[in-house]
Length: 324
Ligand code: AHR
Image: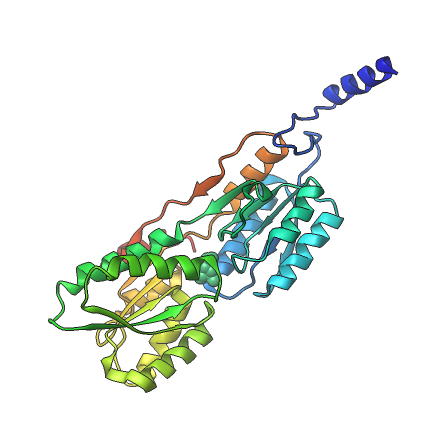
């Protein structure tokens, strides 16, 4: 019996089976990795670029990608994750539409010994062993960067209150929660800044426009600044402001986050004042980390994307370098 077990172990080593980390199973090194990925949806230019990055990097890395679009619904993501578990994929990755409500399904993945990688958005779980790593931006810092830009700009504005309307991202999502918190942390230091309205535009252009129309109806010329949690909502707001007969970027300052090409075009047209970068190009890193996890390597618990801030003044120079 002992001899048979030793022989099996020897065969396993010859086949290139990797070592295990944190209770994860060993994998055959030559078998292509199967990655189940649950995407939030297709709500924005950013998301489209993120999907392209993941699909193209999977192809280049020889990863067998099973891709599911959740259409901004958490229940669809839970279903997709359960289906990946049933299919016994090697690794599951997902960009959670909202932060909370993931414990049960993540425990199911853990019980099936399938490692989970978070990309772009975080989850709010007490047991951090339910995921291996989180790759993505620091959304709080993005909010702070937006706030700091406004703080600087305010030095050039006439004395008196600066009335801000905020277009929030999807309710309960990590970027909406964090970008709000980061921005408020900075602007609360100056009593001139007043957030007079704040509502979700669900990260879409259409909703951003609709909410801005309502803000304009209620407060019109009182509004000095729009802070949009993403470029798409800012572009929607720009349309609403123009239709109301005002000049976006001049009569009302527009601040947004992402740095997509559409935002650069709006800046070059003088309609958007600044965009804080949030990179969607997470595909190459995700494939590498998924392979490392499969190979049993230790990976950092948090991998933060490096990003900058692009004010309108640099838009024309930077535009040719933009990749999304
Ligand atoms: O989670 C990243 C955010 O989601 C992007 O800023 C936004 O455009 C997208 O919809």
